[in-house]
Length: 527
Image (cartoon, rainbow, N blue to C red; front, side, top):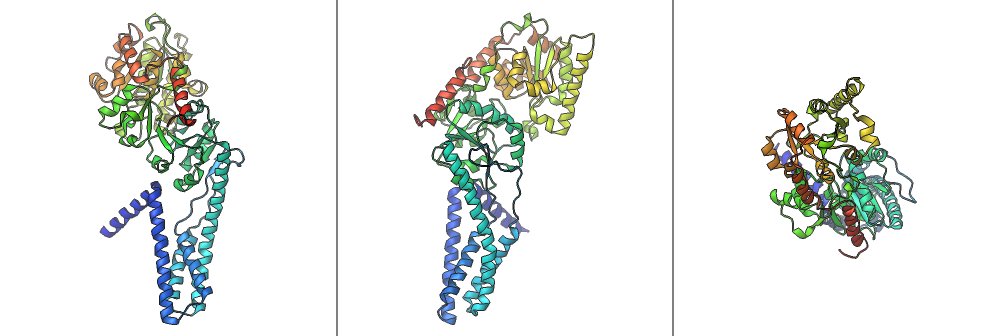
């Protein structure tokens, strides 16, 4: 058992390092070919001593078998394919991949057997049997590898004609439609074309069906480093990252480009301060609050790596035109966040959503309900979404209520999140980037603390200092909502937070600053 565990640890370490390190791959390849050359040389020497000088044709055949065996040691990953790239036919998602397993395994056996029979001095006829088998088996694998390379080179040639200056390097999961849509337009506003690289093949079709990208989309194989070494064309110098996936390391192995962390929103969630963010060349943050967040978490990143550019996406968020207390029937946007993959990062209030919505209705407000997109893809949460929507529908149908709520396709498809914000006078949300963006409006907001007291919650999550706090059990929620929808005692605190969280940009200033900053870099004006 101990041997198996030792073997397994080293096997997984080899696979991991081979996937994320170009120098490691080169070293392993050099060692393999050196070992193969040494073994072939030893076999020639031994055969010479045992049976005299080997025939040249036989030696050449064995050399070809050995070389083919080394080249076929691993199953070649399929070729990448593209969508929307001029000059290249769109590839299938998903796609059929030939099973080369038997050919790979067979060549691993036939190659050494051919070398062993050759070195043992056996007659040429005997040596030719495993040699021919090795050449045929490895030849099938090598032929496929060459086919993959031709396809990859064709995509690279089309990319060279497209002349992208940047790539969105995506290795995330189901949130891709939101993440990609959020950042493609700001990056294109810098005035140069780009490309989207996607790593996880299981999300290729999903992303194609749920995004309306204008940039070419390239689906990489599971050997991303192999693909990227060919696909990084001369004009492509910048990679942008929107998701914290560990598979970003495959992209970051490409040291000939600059790696820029964008994230998919400013928030006080732990994912905003991962230590591995220090590996990026530039971190685009919306304000000084993000830098302070890293410092508070003990993540040491040189100040010169940060670029404070605000949030380009908030340019369409309209500021409040009057105090909320003057609005007869305010509209409240309820936007609970995703529950995350672990309990430690679950800040979602959606499980309390039916109670929160009833409280908002009782307080005399209309409700816009926009849950996180992933909530509808997780059956237990999808049921809660339906319950909340049912409450709003029932209230709309009552003749004795003025309720005019918004939910379903109108709130989640027809309207963008910014549209929802512009139709609302107040917000109820969780620890989420929605809150940071909402600061642009200057309107009041409440946050739901799922585990802490109000004081602990504000200490732990700085953006909550400007929030009205709803506790998990909703104790005292009536008074909290009355303050938010009435006197709004936190108005001045919110303005100070807007400066630190969003960088003090107003209107289109952030979008223009972002476009100018990267236009200069894409054009080669500054590094």
